[in-house]
Amino acid sequence: MTNDPAIDSHTGTPLWHSQAHMPSVMRDELVLVRGEGAYVWDATGRRLLDVPASLWYANIGHGRAEIAAAVAAQMRELETYSTFGRFATLPALELAGWVSEHVPLEQPKVFLTSGGGDSVDTAAKLARRYWHAMGAPDKQVILTRERAYHGLHGFGTSITGLAANLEGLGPLIQHTERVPTSDVAAVRKRFEDEHDRIAALFVEPVIGTGGVIFPEPGYLQAIQQLCQDYDVLFIVDEVITGFGRTGEWFACDRFGLNPDILLLAKGITSGYMPLGAVVISRRVWEPFWRDGSDLVFRHGITYSGHASACVAALRNIEILRDERLVENVAALGELFTETLKALARAPLVKEVRAGVGFLAGVELEDAAIAERVARAALDHGLLLRVISNTTLQVSPPLVVSSGDIAFLARGLEAALNDVQTSG
Ligand code: PLP
Image (cartoon, rainbow, N blue to C red):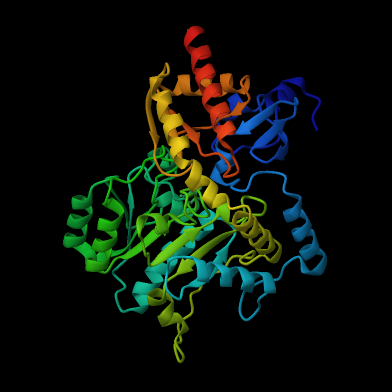
């Protein structure tokens, strides 16, 4: 510690926040101390509806003692053990089993990770490794859509469709390219020209962090078909949409998708522990698993299959199932959409995007207004998050009721009015 007041006053918080302009944030943190269901409490005692479900992940809501108890019991037994080489733990096996039986892929295998970014990097490496193993080492290009967000690890940063995340980093991973967000013909053209160089196309079924952008009808199915026709791996990133957010367990169910690789994280534990998964179709795992194969996928993460995290996931899945939370999204999805869409008439709103499950983006006139509305909303009991500069992320925990949705709309409208009248 220093006694120099000049240094002290400049220091502020010791915590370097993610994606934050620290001079603005360092003396202005919003500290959350407690959560219950769809609500959180800040350090000043305010009760706030968690409108974005933190970073899209608090599917079953906050403060679940059942998960704490299950994780504590596992930690007393065996906190975790690695899954490198021949090691495994019972929770890792059970979770891999559940996932492999419930995703819409046939006979998949499951590689567990510590989160979404890990899942993305694992899948990108596996896609290239697969084509190398298949005698097509030139198939290396990873395609993603403009406005895509696939986390910020090495591959995730390299393949982002959000340019701000590339600033000042110099050359990243080679052979990555963007295609327009919703243009089937552009994908076809890239495949026609160079499918022998293209390893995989990554898609978010609904673009999340890029501003909540829904697929045009038929878009996802058409690009899936193109991937099949041109022998490009189709990788669906369900880090946000998995585990109920669209009103189905997986967006793949909703949109009729059958990817070569499926990525999961966030809702798999509802955030109670950090965990992700890469679900791999038979086509891709087969060369590595076949009797007599000498291939090894040289990849691993210390906490892959972390036993206590897997227990949190398993208990989370039970809660989603027993409390019929995915059904809750399906039942209230239309009300949610209509309520949000009605806000298009409110002041300062440029566009409301909604229509699938508990997912909406309320785009405001500019970035400064979006920040001001997020602040004003705190006085109306709402915790809001701004994404893509101008859009309010509306993706509440799956436990919300029709009353909570009405509370959300009233609060948002009040915050918009506050900002408009204060000029
Ligand atoms: N993929 C998508 C679609 C995401 O939204 C995110 C995070 O928001 C990620 C990947 C990265 O996940 P993580 O932040 O756990 O690394």
